Image 1 (cartoon, rainbow, N blue to C red):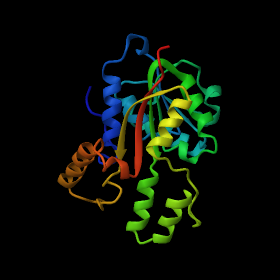
Image 2 (tube, rainbow, N blue to C red):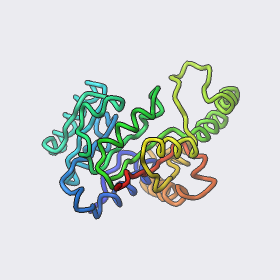
Image 3 (tube, rainbow, N blue to C red):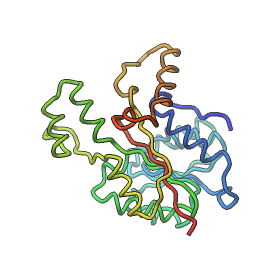
Image 4 (cartoon, one colour):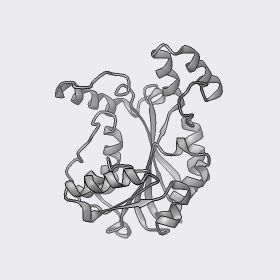
Amino acid sequence: MEPFNQSNPARDAVVWRTIEAELREPAPNLEGLPIVDVGGGTGGFAVPLAAAGHRVIVVDPSPNALASLRQRADQAGVGARVTGIQGDADTLGQAVEADSARLVLCHSVLEMLDEPVRALTQIARVTVKGAAVSLVVANLAGAVLARAYAGHVSEATALLTRGTTDGTETRLRRFDPRSLDQLVMKCGLVGESRHGIGIAADLASHEGAEPDFVAALRQFELEASSRSPYRDIAAGIHVLARRPQQ
């Protein structure tokens, strides 16, 4: 399989590598089944996956995002392989049949929900037994350090001690590896791998950077993603979890 196109090659490198490995040699019972992208928005993952030959269902609450998804998929010539459904993670079971997805993506969604257990339970239900779920969540440690580095020390302290800030930003749920592992297990999934994402890519200024710099940053993310302490202080946590066969 050829590597997927990447809109953010440094930050998303680890996620794409994990997804590619998962799709490379699927179990026989998974062949032909769709990928479901929960909160997939305008298709940053869905369109490249469809271009690689997969059927993708994007479930997103925003009609504007779904309209952009349709336009993007059509422009890429993969409109027939991409289906957009308005909905959210909490009601996923109403949009997607149980035991029907070969892989479910849930990236930067759980931290915005009041009931992440309910959402991830729904995700587990639509995933075929033996298939995987790709989760990306905001990392508490990374958020604390990012604020401290930016000079917002009071916000960093508030986030460190209370898990929220009193600023004007939207309050998000942040996870640490332990709380994410507990959530995964509570919803009937088994965590297989964990990586840090955005270790340097979220801090280094690389807008308009030369290709060599972006390539070097991508390689750093790949190398550091599984090494402690670097993965522990990343902006995000990526976990590949699996629904047990039994």
